[in-house]
Each structure stands twice: as C-alpha cells, then as structure tokens.
Length: 258
Image (tube, rainbow, N blue to C red; front, side, top):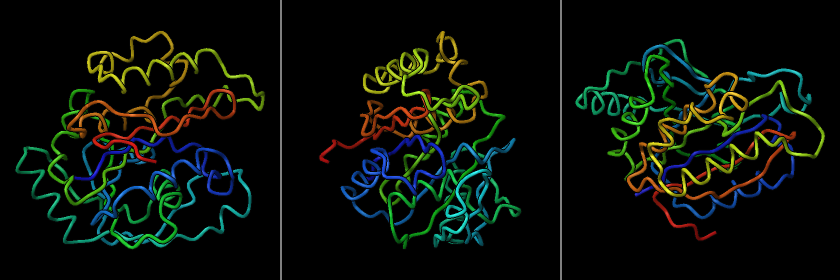
C-alpha cells in the first residue's frame, strides 16, 4: 500500500532554490516505492463540483507572475491516462461520488508539477489531477479522501496546498510571525496525534484566518487526512519561509525511514 502525502508547496521558484524543503521532499520521494500512477489534488484547481483533469492533459502551465525568467523556461514531461481516468470515475460513482471529466482542463498547475518535479526528475507514470470541489464541506472532503482509499494499492495520493498561506503579510525579515508558528505547531499536534475533531473545527482556531485569509490552500489537508487509513500522520519537512509561509508537510500510512 502506498502512503498518502500532504505537501505544502510554497512558491513555484522552490525548484530553483537549494532550501531545506526541496531537499527533504526529494529525500522522501527517494525512500518511496514507485507507484503505478499518481492521484493529486492542488489548491490551484477549484471547481464547484468534483472534476478530473482531461485524459488528454500533457503539459504544464505557468500560472504565476513576477518570478525569475528561468522559471518560465522550466520543462516537465507529464501526462494523464484515459483508462485510469475512466476506471477512477467508475469506481467513485459506485461509491455515490459524482465526478466528471473537465474537458477544458488539459494542463497542470504549479501546485502539481512543481511538487512532482521536486520528487521525480523524470516522471514516467500517469498523473490524474482531481479538483477540490468548493461545494463540499469539511466532512465531505474527508469522506472523499476515504472513498479514495481503494486506490492506494496502486496510486500514490498527494494533496498539495499549504499549512499557512497569508501572502499579504509575507516578509524577508527572518523573524517568524507568532500567529504562523502557533498555528503550525497546532497543526503538527493535530496531525501527529490524529485529533480529528480539532481538525474538523480548525476554523475556530484563533489563528486560522490570520494564516488563511482565503481557505483554498488548507482544503487539501482534509482530503489527505480522510485518505489515511491510519489517521495519524508524521511531519517529514518543517521550514518557515518569508516569516509566515509554512512548508510543513506530512506523510500518512508509512513509517519514516529517511
């Protein structure tokens, strides 16, 4: 059985850097067995209802601005797969999960390819990207993760977002914002001790909206938590960038050996 990953993906130019998070994500990937395919959620693919990327998807998008010219020249080979897509749709519909192909979505956002490029220099397996449905509440997102457990024997399931994501309060000052550190510490405690009720009620945390003025980057953690058979995860990367951007990332259903 493959583990489940939640990865805080940070800024897209992480792939040009030499920071600890880049090294730790690569180190973790090297410790995992190669899956048959990848199922991935990104905070940058939101739809009202549940969608899956077109099986024709075979390119990346540069869905960001203001970064180094070098970043816009990065190439990364990535493809979906029609047979795997139709199989996933069929199985989820049997679980009363309504999902359809997004014919207009034929490229992968940086929340996908940026993470995968850190993990795999050459990606030789299909990538099925599923949207985050804005019509789902927290319980439904967790349930969606649970319904995807049936794919864990073949697929590595990755949820890409951010434990904190307040871009308006970033700073080059090395001092970490108290509200970011406190919330990050709370999340480590919740995930590493499987505190499901605290996670479900996370919006009551005094620091939640300070770290998430908009909540899309936090939503993938609910899917990852639901997908974990053993709800207790383990942090494999801890780093705070720009004073308030947490790169905290978790692995579920596997003991860390790296």
